[in-house]
Length: 484
Ligand code: NAD
Image 1: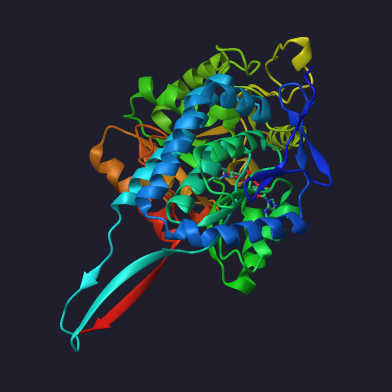
Image 2: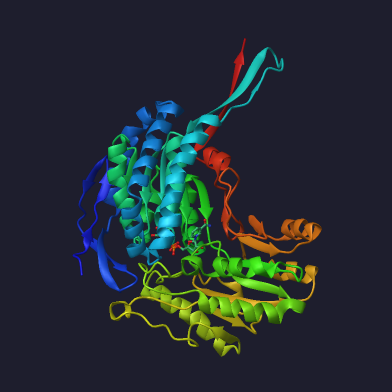
């Protein structure tokens, strides 16, 4: 076993140790992987000071100059892809294959995308003769942006905030999840190498209640972009309210797949397996309620369970594994408790947890692994059908009519994403429009167009991210009137 890494905060372009540390584990073995700074108010104060000093110069740079620096960061990330993918997998439990194919390439893309999109925004101008005036708008960076990100897609989601905040001319204080801090720490070295000026990006590591709250409550951080759970968002909203901060909240989901009898099951089944179980089901967009029209229900269920059993769980370095380990022991227990509740309510567990056995090498037997689990015979009122489980567990239930399934799909507090499977074009448009979800994929899943708005309705969040939306969020608009 290698000695655990010791991470340091990154403030004002230099690495600084912390007075105390917390342990972070390799989910595939349960062994300590690194020691994470247990930062608090003091570190946030230092980061605010560094970000304040760096702001005037960074904000005054042209979009072209900022884009050049961001493109350099992207190039360096790309050159370190393999090293970052290995670290992300060890820190989070996902397979190396997925980190290599998705997390790290998407982090590279985030920097390139916003480096390019910042060059294409325009402002409005009217020269209507209102008392001899010309009116126009300008956008300016907001100031110091606080970025708080979760553990499920650590570098991907951090850079999805970092790149637009920087492109728009803000300086930044980021707080990654204390469970997965390693790739953010590795990124800091690359930021220096890319020529990001000291203080433009500061990363303070540690827990939500200590360092997260210090950041959210700081009066000199006027904008907070948060991705995480709904209860944390409530707390952040309360803490930031006295300062009237600008907030973006990207939260959880209880995402339905609605599968009509005319669906192409050859495509639908593998894609719904992926949408339910990719990254151990730890993606906010994962499907966790599958509504299948009665006439194809039995056939779907049989084929779906067979495919779930083939979705291999293995050690993260195994190239044939589709799923690695869950993030933590506490999370594994939470996910298991939902399955136990469903069982106690009389639902049937068709495969996975408690039904099938998983064999793992000796070293990984203390890891946080779980097999893909399919539940049926469950009521819509059950907590497994209402609450976000955020693990490899999905419920499959039948429905009769279009109207009925829309009502049932909408009957949860969340509204992040949905999928609709049908070959009837009219039905696809009708149903997609009525589903209460910020994102609806039809006959596919998780194909993202970064230009367009990303985000949820209801308790899934406030605000949208994307080329235009993130630019608007990380800037202030002013209307200027010039009398000539
Ligand atoms: P979480 O809310 O526990 O933590 C998210 C981040 O907030 C972490 O960095 C954490 O340390 C910090 N935090 C916790 N308490 C805080 C506090 N009081 N003040 C300030 N910061 C605090 O969420 P998680 O368990 O890390 O992530 C899983 C959740 O994230 C799921 O609900 C998932 O659906 C959601 N998520 C949403 C999206 C999206 O884009 N909508 C994407 C990924 C994950």
